[in-house]
Length: 323
Image 1 (cartoon, rainbow, N blue to C red):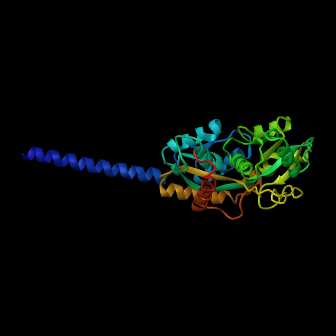
Image 2 (tube, rainbow, N blue to C red; image 1 turned 180 degrees about the vertical axis):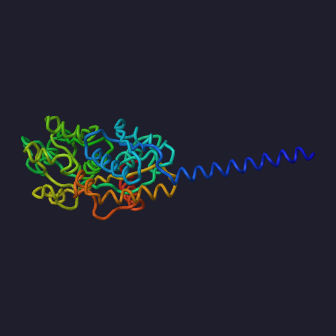
């Protein structure tokens, strides 16, 4: 090889080395300066419900903290599958994040053949935890949970109970209850909490399995809706006169956990920034006032703790939702 070729080769190698170094530096700088453009905040539910309120409250707060804009995008088709597929397919660069509850993240892919699974995401933290309860319209003949369930026993498949999504945690918990108790309901899935309450008020369903007072506080105050029983370990703070389902003799336990997620593989510094931001926002008076102080946990659940909650949910329902 002559000197000219050797010199040319050396220049080429040096140039490639400099280019790779520059690219690496640019990538690092881009990550460290995050965000430099708007962040898409994917929502697997329709606008107007408690999850939407949570997303918008945290989105606004996070935008102020990290110096960017979080744009909420509601994609409620396919019981939230469309939103989760978009999130799973996005680059893990922090510019696409999303709220999810147990339904879209865990239960939907467990019971359907979808293009994503729970393993495609990483948790960033818990934003809110919403207790659940059974409610009926004011003119309902059912004055207690026992009345409602006794009617279902007497006429299998005739008593209709609405739930916010076919694969929501409430729908799956109701399915588990039917399987274990032998009671058969006519379960009516809706696109989300807003449609569920509309159906309840319109008399299209006998009862609704809803997210505590976030969904029905105004209607209860107006006398349009009556809470029958809380589905958590304790009575609802909003409706203390309503007994728990356990007091009525039924093992129903479910809480809607609202976590923030990103595609797996997010750079650690971006993950840390968002996790820290969620914790700070969870203590922000404006965020708390929008969501409700009883629904923003006093003790912050970080990325690891949030991930574990959703993993435990998958374990709980694996046998019930085996494909």
